Amino acid sequence: MKTTVSRIAGHATDLFVDGAWRKPASGRYFASYDPSTGAPWYEAADGGEEDVDAAVNAATQALQDAAWNAITPTRRGGLMHRLAALIDDNKEDLAQMETRDNGKIIGETRAQTGYLPDYFNYFAGMADKIHGEVLPINKTGMLNFTMREPVGVVGVIVPWNSPLSILATALAPCLAVGNTVVAKPSEHTSASALALAELCMEAGFPAGVVNVVSGYGESAGHALSRHPGVAKIAFTGGTDTGRKIASNAAANLTPCTLELGGKSPHVIFDDADLERAVNGVVAGIFAAAGQTCVAGSRCFVHESIYDRMVDRVAARARAIRIGRPEDPNTQLGPLALQSQLEKVQRYVQYGLDQGATLAAGGGRPPIKGNGWYFQPTVFSAARNDMKIARDEIFGPVVCMISFRDEADLIAQANDSVYGLAAGVWTRDIDRALRFARAVDAGTVWVNTYRSASFVSPAGGFKWSGYGKHNGFEAVREYTRVKSVVIDHSGLGRDAFVIQLK
Ligand code: NDP
Image (spheres, rainbow, N blue to C red):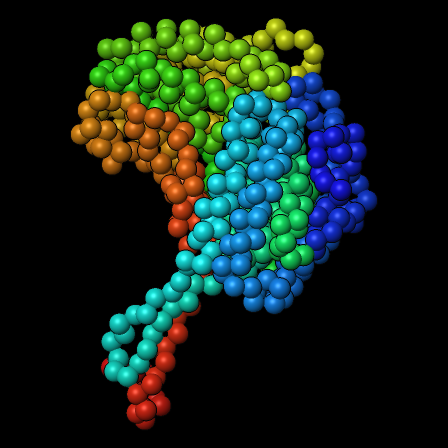
């Protein structure tokens, strides 16, 4: 019995705890909606505190069981390779599931699920290459070495925009280093996390290593973030929610990795390859209907080419094919949530009220039915101090802002509470490097945008959060370092003096 699109459509899903399906203690289920029609398509279990507690207990038990903690790192990597192969076998169904759940176009979800096997294989390869060090301690007759250990139970709280990929950014390094996981998907997109947990079992991970508790943020998410049995929280989502989670976790001094919002500057200098730059800007904001944390939502253009660039970006925006997300010809699907649609509409009005001009879009496209569609929208005459340039809209809306020179650009680009990502288009390498050094952003792309890689550390500064995923940085996030000091000198030492030599 697999969680597939055909099996869950019209049915109810349960929680996945300790390797088995479990009914929620509340006995309640809630609807998950298809954004392309606005209609419910399955019901997810309304997990709460009691269910989170059961999942954390199962994850704690799994940490203590030899089936997980005595497995060799190479074998652990082997399980992950097997999981990667199973994801590969199921990638089409997983893509269909994501598209149905959050409205992301099928071309994007296929790309995401097609990328996941490599993601898991990469971390699988790390499983037996993580080690401590022997340190040249400044004491005679002593040996000091470090061990890099799993942190324990990791609570992973996932949003709705890329549920499976974002879960994988925490799950893959967590499994590679030997942690156990309790995941709380968004109430809007529970299906793919449950399917992934099932694949983990099929791959041979022991019961309790991967658990999924669906439910609401304020109940299941809240309970997970304040559970004393959780050693680390990995959260991706909005900045306000990130604050609540960090504050809950602080009660137990539980460390967090927070991947939060962004308002990323995407810059075009007058010496750029303008064709490529326009492509980059269009893909940087309209991919996933702008619902990505790294969306290049503030596009800074040198004043000498500003009007030309606005025209070109607007023309490209108007040509985007909007339609049903499962149609492979569609370039822009609906927004994932009705509340997101309403938020985007509100922000377009703020933009107009503050004097920005619509160069493209700004309204609902003429698509039949009740889907949550919105046109790709380009604001010209936008200023960095406008609300549309200050707040994360999380929709297909780009603000075109002009700049005079590099100093003006950096001042404007960094005048934001966020610091997640940035992009720059120029043929001048010195200028690109000056920008990369000066900008407050965790990732800087030069003559490309949204080029993600599992080797490349990602994570923001300022209100975009802290901690990194991808690469060895992710291993650091999910391990703890223990220092072991051994006296093998055979010397008697004074019991009341700390040994300085
Ligand atoms: P949230 O930040 O609220 O949701 C992310 C996850 O956190 C979901 O699983 C959610 O559950 C959970 N959650 C919500 N409240 C709590 C809580 N008090 N304690 C623990 N977990 C909680 O995203 P929203 O859907 O509210 O989106 C709001 C804004 O956040 C968006 O408009 C966008 O600007 C930004 N955002 C950024 C994302 C990113 O990738 N950086 C991703 C998603 C949103 P549930 O869904 O059940 O509420």
